[in-house]
Figure 1 (cartoon, one colour):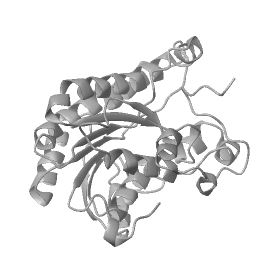
Figure 2: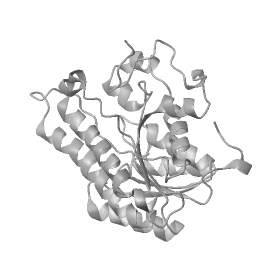
Figure 3: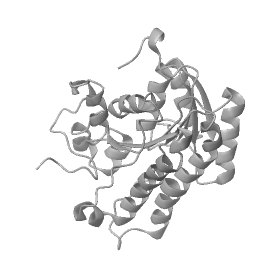
Length: 281
């Protein structure tokens, strides 16, 4: 759903994102750039990892090639000084922040007995502390922003015992992101700052899915990251005083925007529903 230059919906607006070197975050950055946005990425990936493609620098280069302005900031979303530095640099470069995207996340689906404590700490520190730190640092600028939005890549709160019991630590970390975000929707409603959660209906073809959730077979059952990115743009261009306090699936957002044919987003096999999403009975 690429827009032409005459109808760019994010021209002049600045998006601050945690992560974004690859996968869904990069796809959102590219989609925002095509809509005319300035994109600031806070990520740790200063140098290439042999296991994963992309760095914060290569992502920024792709975003600029797509038509946006980009700023790559190397730092750790868990670290308050890193976050404050990234936000200060964004404001210095672009004059403000209109959108905060909480994208950074760690994934470990082990059972309670099998999950190392350091992995528990990593997930809670990135998903909860990182989301809190970045949003908190952005808030004074969002209050002065244009159609300000907070968007967290986190799921609807599905309290089914199936999901609660499969990987409680990961569930806590992701549901915690959603609870914070829905809390901000209520806390800042009077300021006109929207806060929403967005989650894929199906697996998404990313390095995490390739490496952790089933290899090539899982990739065949996954849609492309662009489906989440296109849904994100629809959310972020919605009226912030009205389009808030929701935990949304990508397909719901696109269908509400009139997109009924999702074949462009791929998946050569039978699509697999994502974690926390119940298959139709």
